[in-house]
Image (cartoon, rainbow, N blue to C red; front, side, top):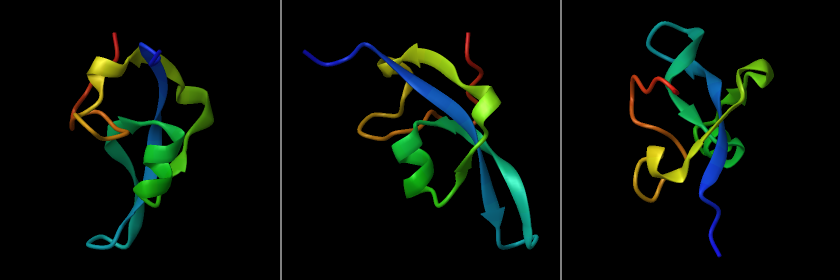
Length: 67
């Protein structure tokens, strides 16, 4: 049986255009953050429905706001 919820986090990522670390506009799972070459921001953990992730991915759509 597949899980119906997943823990996602805000993710700090490097922005090469501005040569700075920024907060992604997406929330991501731990695996998603690794795939984004990002770093989880630990105190931002939120449990959401797996339906909130983009299909086949380990992150939410840009601008996602958890309930």
